[in-house]
Image (cartoon, rainbow, N blue to C red; front, side, top):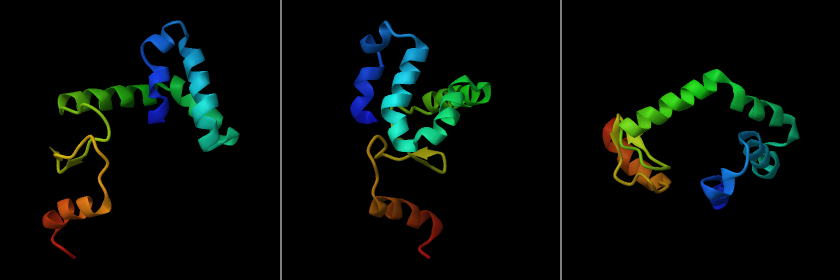
Length: 103
């Protein structure tokens, strides 16, 4: 999805309705991944007040914690220095092993 981000923020969406943007994302990006059978559930999420509330709370919590982008990782509430870049298995092991004791 990152490859397609530029088409869905700022100028490319100024003249489109919310429904048009959601439909475009659903048809062009989501359907090939989840298929037609799950598309109704995906679309319903855009009109679900619980999902909306949870998303807003998570966003505000992230802002309060200094999250500036994705991916962003925390361990025991502490941001990892490599946040913003994907972490491979070895990096996760070197981060977590000292905290749990090597098993």
